[in-house]
Length: 228
Image (cartoon, rainbow, N blue to C red; front, side):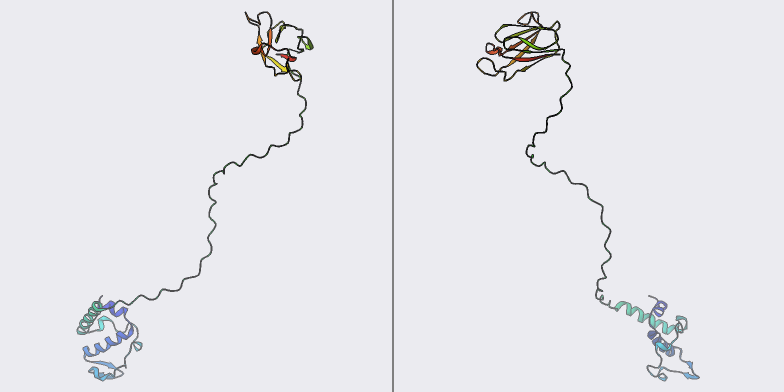
């Protein structure tokens, strides 16, 4: 730190001390018409920093000897100065206002499926559907007699469980539905096997053949048959 910086930054009290040194170094000064020749002529405490106007004493107004002594004093103070301890921490300030709400997070994954509920009550019966497009149909008795016929056809019952139909064409689809409980002789369940005209075999002389319980020797039973 230079002497000029030291003078500029220090309090007026220091400048008062410099003024004393200036009096001693200069050898004379004039104050209110009194000639000062030595420091002892100024009583201690008469000149204070408060009595000196700011900027009155500058480095240029000091003698070389005073400036030299002041430079030594500044250097010594800088070398031996002790850093003051840090002051106590101030009190915490007031809490700030609450911030705005953050954006909504991403939707979570779907949870596991819950258990299946109880079975509901049966709904009301729906309206009757439109008339079918069957080319022909008939009700067939256990003995092979036809009734409720649509489209001309003939039927034969050559053996137990065997029913043959001649339509004048070979239908693309044949559907057999049991009549009543579809129980044959002995009251057992009836299985249906349907065949269409073939070059050889049981259906070689008919457009459609129906076999009831063929695997167990055949059974006679009533049924409905539809041709499409």
